[in-house]
Length: 142
Image 1 (cartoon, rainbow, N blue to C red):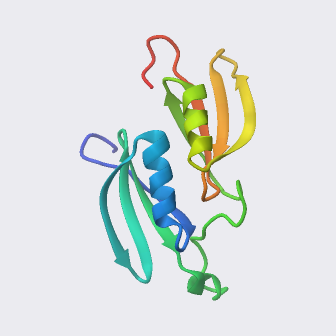
Image 2: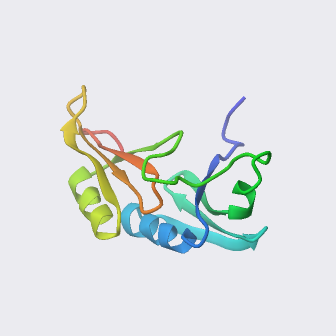
């Protein structure tokens, strides 16, 4: 049973050495707040909060990738080479896309309307993860 006693945090793997750059992107674009950082098993971990979502940026250890029998978790080798994406409802998609591009992100797809008439854009963050940005409709939180 999931309830208020639980908190979900996502671990997001980036190329080792790009942890701080990625954290700065999330701070600049999404207003993320860093809550903790530490080193563990040769990797840097940066804990952040984006609204209610907990996010841990983790450096992907290249030594793990060199051992085929010791699978996952790895960082994207090219933009979008991921098994999931993040979807955020935001107050102003155009403003967020502008901030993302200025902070080192890239457009994945053009601005467009979804089936509900909301403005939608998708971007790659500097680490290659996909973020789908959806503009909040009147009365919808974003």
